[in-house]
Image 1 (cartoon, rainbow, N blue to C red):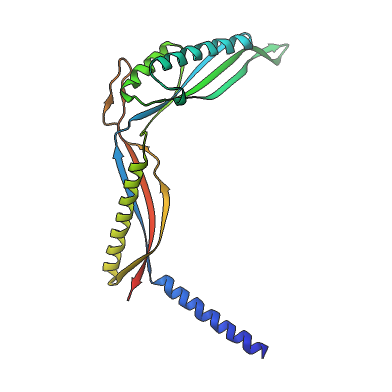
Image 2: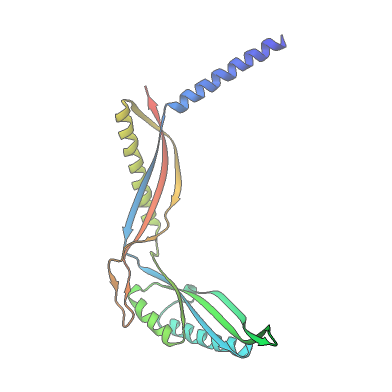
Length: 231
């Protein structure tokens, strides 16, 4: 009796598995892409100040003085406190190798202090002037420039819409080519995207002395749709 029950259960599981496999086989899965390009309206720059001195306190004081002067200039140029953030602050010894009776002896000859600040410039036409001003005020390191948009959500929504439209068009083409009818959408999954990507330089931002090319930024979306096959 027990063997009969096990055999019956095995038959049921096999039928369920076959039905599931058949159901999965009658689906069309596609991935759609959507891209939206726009001119940026904000830039993020990373600036640094580094000074070296024989005493740790001297190196840090010189760096702090330059950063304070730079932050004061940024405030006068209209950059708000919320758009300025310290990214890194460091103090390290400077070592030199000396030869003493044929042996190398490490010796601290001074200290180097660094302070790195990230700045968001929302008034994009003023970017070149901001760069020129902070360099004059003591910024001696420049670690990056990234363009973006202040409100990316509407562009992301448009990119998602285009991605879905692209996926539907692909599914319709596949169904037509296969000679089947496209059914309802069964699942929709977003695969990420939405992060701004800098495009080829297209236009220049006006500046007093530092020329900057803003170009365009692209926001993208990727979605995967699963359709049923009718009939």
